[in-house]
Length: 239
Image (tube, rainbow, N blue to C red; front, side, top):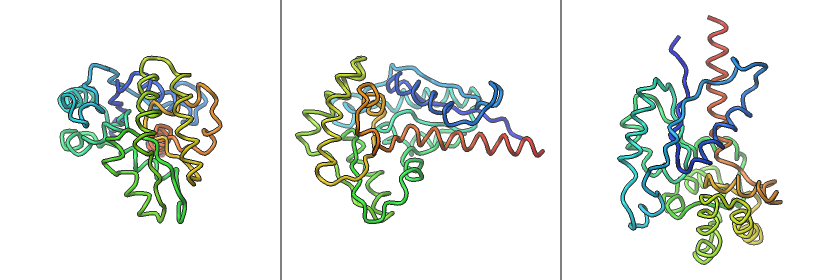
């Protein structure tokens, strides 16, 4: 049987990478160390800013992403996860360059979101992720409707909240992002997709009440990875 090794393309930012690793552990049923998934992470934050790049205000992060991806392939990763929603803008180029298959965070999220028929789903994400439409397209295909932040909400709450988390000011970020979550629910969202890796830790830092209706794509990705590991472990036990 082929070796199993999860690779994480991270550093966007470092907290998001550690958050994904912790959630993989939480999602893996294990009684001892040896029953947990083997993981190697490229947690190198010297990657061009994804939001700035997509806004046309900075260089593309793709060369840095491809370099990190190459290191994970060289390490022997059998599956690769990208610990950043916005970086999935370059998913196709990364998947084409990788020996190991890449899991897509939006596909994993839909598995946790079902059912959505007739439901209004709020989407908290960077402008790049909103513009790309991965989540909206999948929600529409499931019969749901997406509610996105208004431009003034992005300027006042999302962007400063996101960068507060990157500075380590989780409580400040949580307070701003919680205001955005409240606004989306007031406009009719029954659930929220927290489609920026800074959002779940920020809301958790202030114990925001909106966590209860939030779908965490990082956890969904961790759950998908843990499922792959359990399937591998079960096949190995039967061999």
